[in-house]
Image (cartoon, rainbow, N blue to C red; front, top):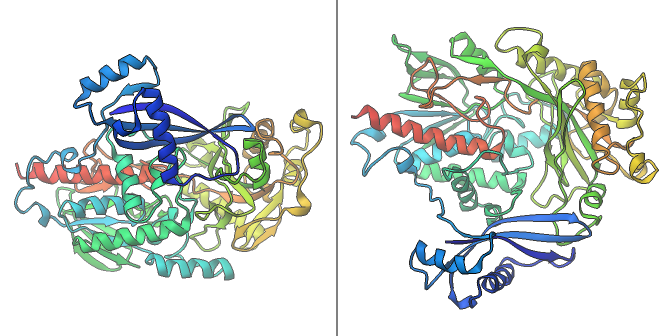
Length: 570
C-alpha cells in the first residue's frame, strides 16, 4: 500500500467534519499529491490523526493515510508510482496483519485434545478479558474468575459508594468486571511498540464490541467510562458464546501445586478446582493475592512506581493554553503531558490526564483512601484533572520485604482517609505550597514570567468529584521530600502551561495506584519462574501500564499458552 504521512487540514475551531466527508476531503488531497484521479484509488484507510497546535491560533488536523491503487498490482508497481512523486512523506508500506494462530506457532489445525486443557484466567480487567477472548476464539474454554461483580451490578455498587461512603471491599472502583480501567478515562494510547500488530488487534476488538471506530486512528484514542462498560459486557457475552465461563464474586484465594512445583488447582472461595494452567491477571490493587503468592514462594520482586496527587484546573484554562481557544467546537477538549526532573533527581510527571473529567474516590480497603481520574465519552465536565506524581523506589519504602511497596501505599492511604474523615481530601495549591515551602525556596513567581500577573479563578471554580470531598491539609500525606518534589514540579509546569501553578488549582489526594508495586517474575515463555503452568499477566503482574498495554499483554500471554500446549503434544 502507499502511505502518505502528512495531509494537513486547517481546523477553524467551529465546523466538525463527519467521517464520510472527512474521507472525501482526504482522498481528494491524496489524489492530488499522487497526481492521479480519485477514481484510481480502490482502497483508502485513515491510519492516524493528530492535532498540530504549534502555531495557534492556526490549528491543523494532521492525517496519515494508506491507500491502494487499482492499477498497481504489486509492491513494485506501487514503488514505481511513488518514485515519480519524489516526496519523502510518501512511501510504500507493507501493513502488519495480526494472525493469532501464527503468533502461537500453530500450523494448520490444533492437535486433537489440545482444547481440552483446563485454563483459568484470574481477573477480568483488560489483560484477563483479552487473554480469555483470544483463547476462546481459538477453541479453548477459559474460566474467568473475578472477585467483583459483573459490570451492571458493579456500577450500582460503586455509585452507592460515591453517594454514601459505604465501601464494598470486593466490588469497587478497583475490582469487578473490566478492572480498574472501567472507572477511568478509558484512554487507549500506549508507549508500547506495536511491531507484532497486537495493539491494532486490540483496538479493532474494542470497536467490534462497541467503541467508536475513530479509536483506530486517533493519536490519543479515548473511549470513556460510559462506553467502556458496554464494551467489556459485550466482550464477556461473546466469550461465553464461544464456550468460556465467568464466575463473578468469586475470589481465588490460593494456588495448589503438585510434587514437581507445577500448578495443579486453584482454591476459589473455599472450593478446590483443578486446572492445567492459570493466568494471573489480578490487577495492581490485589494486595491480598500478592500476600498469598508471597506465602507460596512464587517468584516476585518489588519495583519502583509513583505516588502523588490529582490536580484540577478549569478545562477552559487548559484549552486556552494548548489551543489559544477557550471553547473550541471542532476540537477535542485539550489534554497535556508534563514531565520534569527535580534537583534531587526524582521524576515528576502528569499521569492519566482526564480532560473534562472527575476526581474519583477509588478506595478498595477499609480505612484507606486513594483517588483516580475518570471521564465520560463526551469529556464535558468543566474541570480538567491529572495525577501529578513523583517516582519512588525501594529505598523509599522503609523495608526490604518484597511487599514493602504495598505497605508504603497503605500508609499514605491511611493518612488520606484520616485527613478527609473518609472523604476525598482537597486543598488549594496556594495553601499546599505555603505549608511546604516554608523557606521560600520555590518563591520564584514562575507564573508571573508569562503575563506579569497571577492567574486566579477561585470564585467560579470548585472540585468535580465522584464521592464526597473535604478541604483539609493534603500536604500532610506525603513525606516532606516528596512534597517538595511535587511543588518543584508544579512550579516548573507553570512555565509550560499558563496558570498551571495558580494559587487556585485544587490538589486532591492521594494517588497511589499508578502501577503495581511488585513484578511477578516470568520467563520468556510467559510462565512464572518457579511455578509451571502459572502465567503472570498485565498491570498487576508488572508487565503493563494502562488499558492498552494490559490488553496487548493479555493477547501475548494467550499466544504463549497456546504455544505451550501445542509443544506439549510434540
